Length: 187
Length: 289
Image (cartoon, rainbow over all chains, first blue to last red; front, side, top):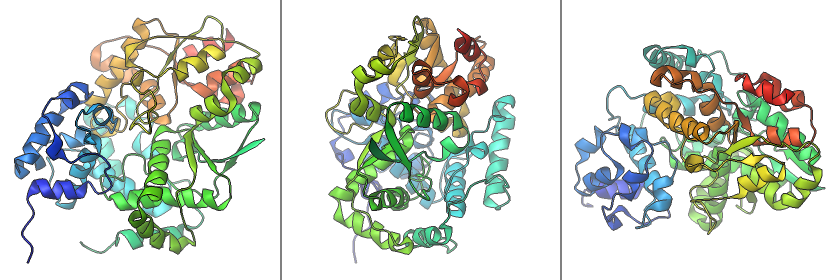
């Protein structure tokens, strides 16, 4: 019987292919937070979220919008003096929160990612008019959120009719995907 | 004529068709032979990684495997997100046999096998490295004299860093613009993020990020912003109205793919570069000037 992993260890393990240093190397210098163009819109700055993970504050981390506000611009990653791939850590946190189905209420990010992946599994390609269509700018912020959710809902129901392209060897492609994640089976 | 495996990516089949047109036109004019990768699939942009990392790499690896099969060693992508995904998947495949084993097990379903042996580059790197400033200058028949262009590098073209290249203050985009006779605009935000997919998932944050870029380019009297990525182009161009509404600003600046500007300088008709369809009207002024 192995001992149960701490939250900070779990996150470390999720950074599977990260070639940077583990977050234990973090100096708490705040270069990431000063660099991050989205920091103003985060509940916790990148520096704070790393500190929270190290303290195993799992519930607080899972309730934070921080990693869902990351645009994957990698500016923090390239500037981190401790060599931590912080943007990749944000991805790891997104995955953790998706797998645990625990994230802050009202976020679009988790649905967006899920519908995006489903769309690609269904066709092999993504089609932006669903995701960043030119009609979106005409709507108010409230309508936009609605619009995104509607599109997401339609995709999830397989009813979005706007999929113009499919790859040719779609069957092979879908079997390939199934070798990685068993789609349609509950985890 | 040097041959390349060309990976257009999904955006270039829909919202960024003009980037695809202009890329193919410019490649032809520069004697680069782009062979589109057969039956390629979406690379996942930034949306797969939050779901499953191994799946994200596998989807990219399928395209690499098809490209490897052709025997061509060079892989070129005009989209920064596609480029970054292809570059790192290719590099990790070579470095991590365990990852390669997992992925090759999945690829068997499509009778493919991947090694990670390609040379993956972004379109602008291929143009600057394999054609070069001198050649571009020689082929420029219609120099964009007096046109002040803000080079917008964005993120994933530069980051994460691949080797030891300059990523805090790169100059290659400026050099390219100077080679086609334009005047590159110096401004601090040239590699600051446009918000990427936050435009969908966190609209408020993304609009602020776009606002900062537009303001900086306009404060430095840019006539046009040049991009190297469909996502950057869409965020900066299509969402200007929303920025104006949100912040009470009156920004209006054309945003064009660097290949459209290059195409004009190389004497290619604007209609072949997708320029006539540009939504910001100033682009029309630019064309007729």
